[in-house]
Length: 132
Image (cartoon, rainbow, N blue to C red; front, side, top):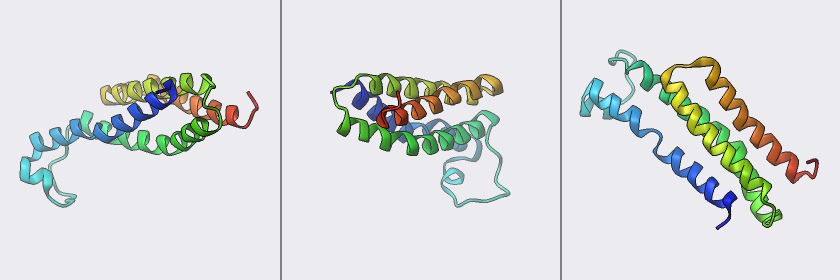
């Protein structure tokens, strides 16, 4: 398995489980049945970090929708190129850092690591287009 394939799979796996911390918080705040209830604008609000985790997860899913198709294209069009693997690794670690930093409520650093992930996506697209 290539580095590109490994980090793209890890990114998808991360997105599949990144909801767990904020759901656990919801259970702690609202109880098990409250956590499983339909949306209620009057429900007890979740902890601040959990609200930020939900937003960070949403941002990561949205960013992955741009990154993943490019990663698949790189797997198909340039299977021997190692640069996309480096970009996938960078994207993955930047988005993990973004999630943690967002949960901690550190605004400027959060934006910087997200910018690194976006730059990785742009660089991957430019690589596929033959610009870099």
